[in-house]
Image (tube, rainbow, N blue to C red):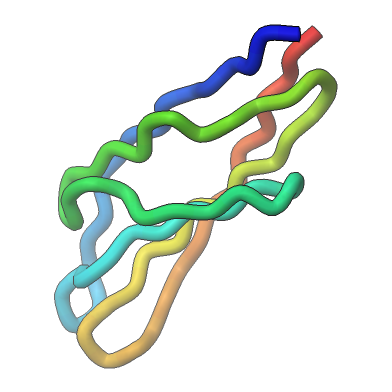
Length: 74
């Protein structure tokens, strides 16, 4: 079975200045997005079924905020 990936992008602001954007999937994959205020997370693996991807923005004071998206692959 061929593996599939997705790309997620967005914008982040607030706090003490965004320093890092990280992502983690419900299947255990994880990584760091390119960029901070405007970012792109490419190559996120999506196996068959539902996969939740949590995107977390981290600021210079150690605070963070997150959003989750669900990707579905047949």
